[in-house]
Length: 123
Image 1: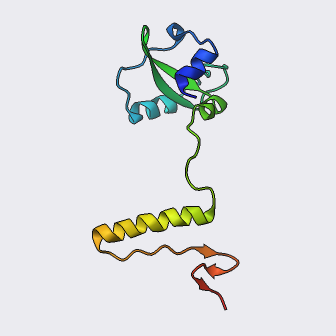
Image 2 (image 1 turned 60 degrees about the horizontal axis):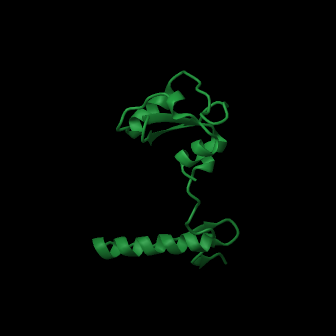
Image 3 (image 1 turned 60 degrees about the vertical axis):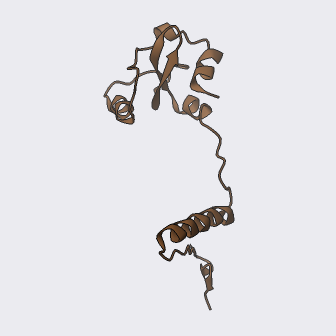
């Protein structure tokens, strides 16, 4: 779910949130997170781990400080490969693309403790 959906689900009043600049950079978010102030999670009141800006139609941009649990609730689910073989297939595909674009040779090899190099078995 999005941050604004989360805030709506928990009936958070945007007028009670701290004003945020209209255009926020990663640097500004990082600076907010490094401040010595411990802010409460906008939803539950626990200590916050992340900060995002949500723009409300009537209230404008506001800071939404979220604890770990509520930040995770707003993250997109992982859509990448979930097996070593799938990850290696993606890496090999990207390496082949780069090799085609640059003319450089690219090869992906993996090491496993049990078998050595995956493409060159131990004897």
